Length: 242
Image 1 (cartoon, one colour):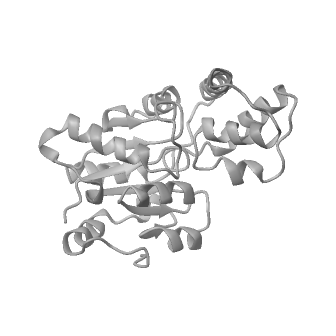
Image 2 (cartoon, rainbow, N blue to C red):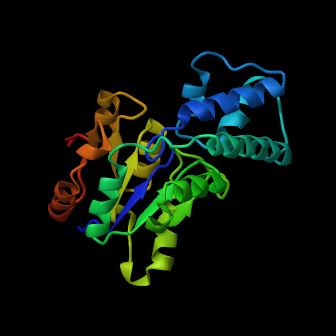
């Protein structure tokens, strides 16, 4: 089996912005005359889309909202996210990302982003970080209803990569996913993909238990080694961490 594409999560893998998202979700709830409990954001929202996050937070508090109302909340949060980013001179892009992208490009592997984030937020960050040219396919949270841990986003990314590169004939098992949350790892595995868990958000031992590979930092990901394992195994089991 050959490694043919690398799919990235976004928040917690490309940009260290989860604290900002937590602050903005908390602000939305306060504006709704509600409060978030300690640890609730981490429990409900990490690795999931804004839609899934807000819907569950509101449902837990007895609020039943229409889809139109929910989308309005998401749009309000996204506008606030844009304003916050405009005030940040240097975005908190994770160290090691640029070198990893260089390795992937040198191997001539297409890259995609699969995220619960709103597309405009992803595009803003990629543009500011001068990364837009490298990610030819983006699957965003406002394009797909089923949030991670559902596999829908990753499967849609395979479809779009095949549309963009017809000769690729990409299958899910030929993809490597880079994730930082249990929900994201589950989504990738349910899609039939192998996963590197990077310990940006959860401890290394949690990533090691759940992903095919685990690393503390993106700079530790040895793409050549992963490609070699892809070439001689089908597929790697979750116990083969390294």
